[in-house]
Amino acid sequence: MAGSERLRTDDFLGRLNDPTASAYVKGLCGEEMEFYLVIEQGKITGVKYYTEGCAGTRACASMTASLARDKTIDEALRISAGEVIKRLPDLPEEHLHCSILAVTTLYRAIAEYVLRQ
Image 1 (cartoon, rainbow, N blue to C red):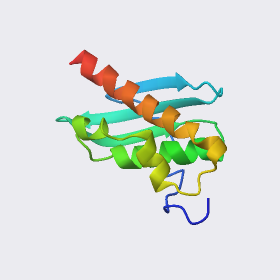
Image 2: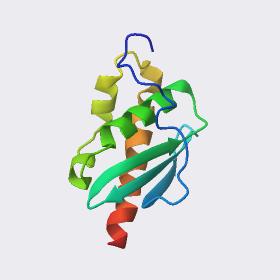
Image 3: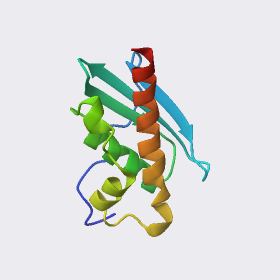
Image 4: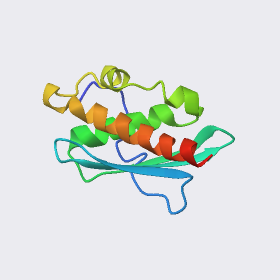
């Protein structure tokens, strides 16, 4: 993905032992993704993702995590798959669906947090 927004896909890769919220989603393409959030006073202060998916999946997950970090819950819920795609202009068309998987997994983690409040 040369020329795309510079972001190392391993900056946010990993799992958290004691997250505030987490989610797992398996996409229609068969890719699996996990998101882990640390939320303090309504703000996402820590975020990790985990996937064994392709480079497109990892890039979309990493971009989504980057966009969510240091955001309030309301701000994070405004992150869209379109925004992820826009920030990764070299993402091949056959991997555009990866942005939906990443954002969906983030939303599910946020929903877990909100429902427990």
